[in-house]
Image 1 (cartoon, rainbow, N blue to C red):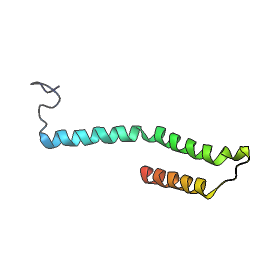
Image 2: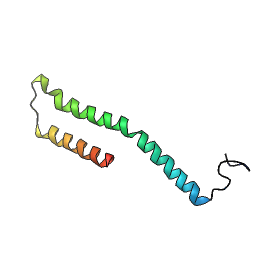
Image 3: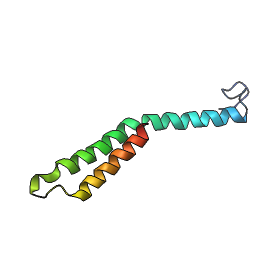
Image 4: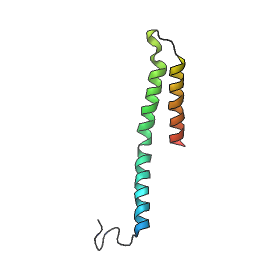
Length: 76
């Protein structure tokens, strides 16, 4: 990985740190779709779960509001 003719032969410390941040950013970007689906499925389950006679309470609205807020922060 770092031998004489390896990929990091001309890379100094700053280049390696920037490549590490790029890799972490790539992993974060790859996780956006699954995390968004997970959060939105939880929201829809809470919102549509009123079929058993339980009314839609303010606690559920506040929880859904926080999920949407965190999703907005994550996307932007």
